[in-house]
Length: 250
Image (cartoon, rainbow, N blue to C red; front, side, top):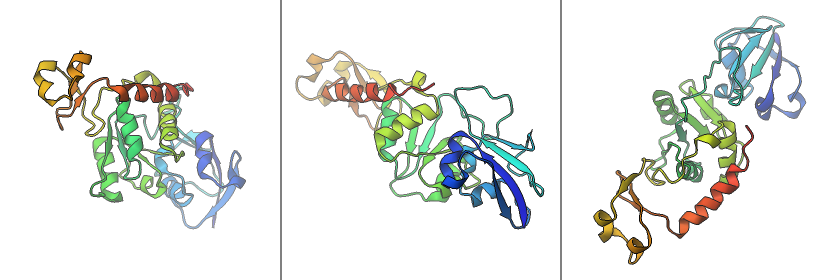
């Protein structure tokens, strides 16, 4: 059996049992697995790991550590500029997301803030298809399924820790440093498509009685043709946004 010394930093400790958190610990493995295989066996999603050091030098996910080596694992710190090259490079800014079937409310909240948040749920595409879609499109896969993030096709991914949708939204905003990129009410919450301004007279027959007289600006989704304006729901959504963005930690 091969012995290794491992140390995980910052948010990567979320995936470890208590006895291994915030400390260097010894583990034994059969054969000579790659770093990626080690992470999967430890139930740590590889897309969460940005930098791997073996005895202080950067190595890749395919590196096979030798007997007694010390490995250090670091997550992506979006608020800092790393001095070492990252394996899971930060995605484009703003990032484009793909959410698994269980995060529908989070997807709608992200769209409300103007972020590209694709959500495939009807029918359920399955883990393999989700992983392939995220990898092919360069999207950040958001999920609460560690096994899904362990798939090799996933290039960018994040395990959402919170279970309540509003807490999940605050977590994702902090994790990806999105507070300065918020563009609320600019995207269709149903279709995930950017909204376009539309003249009131062209949609007058689609508006409830009295709405045209009360509002000057209207927007339409080019996909589903849904019309948007600043109705009573707008104030409620704005209060939610105000509550969430107070959690800015960067």
